[in-house]
View (cartoon, rainbow, N blue to C red):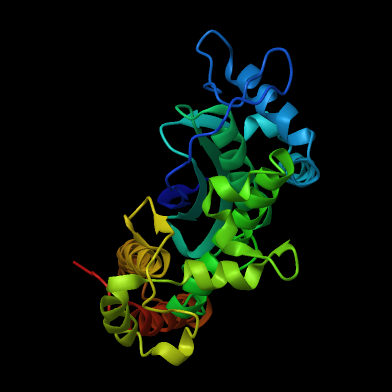
Length: 322
């Protein structure tokens, strides 16, 4: 069946913060952690191979590399097929929804992910960003914004504290840093904020506390979640403490940025659902009025249109529909 591609949904999450200066550390004869990782005279694969050699030398780096390679292989790709360079570091997950104009009730979904690594970084920073983004790529669960259960609360929690979310990715980044620089890693980054000195481990609980700090955006945050019938009890980790971790995509603390992203996603989803409803309605209007046709396929299509329209009104009443 030939499908018309009517919707491509792109959801990107990127993590960015100020990087500290690092002393020169020789890993081998060719690689220096303080120099630029990206060499214009080398191919992308050659540049990534140099980073991979560094990650392979430490347990946390080796583990995420192996898992990412396994995931890529599940779709017939190598690791080099799913990584590329860019002006920023992020993991781009694309949800593609396909349906035929002649049969808009039949929908197919496909997800694709790509890791972009900032080509302007020093080698150590690139290694850390690479470990961070590979964690997103490997472990973050894909979501479907057309699902009836795609709610703001779950989106915020999944983005920050969910499997492969920002906290998990930052924990892997910090583990790699501490393994590469065991004596000075904590002093050179915000990783010390998620390190439990009593237990001697990087703590997810501390990470959650840090990523939910909103600072002077807390009032705005409360007003925004109230629009979705939520309050502070629904997101108990959110606080007005000074925010350290800021989303580069929105320039806001992560909980606030997640609301912006959710609203942006749902605006696009609702517009696309409007288009799909229009196609379904046009098809019903063009359908033959014979009793046989209505008794068989026609009735089912009318029911499908009615159910989708009712669902659309419930889900999209808060979002742009123009």
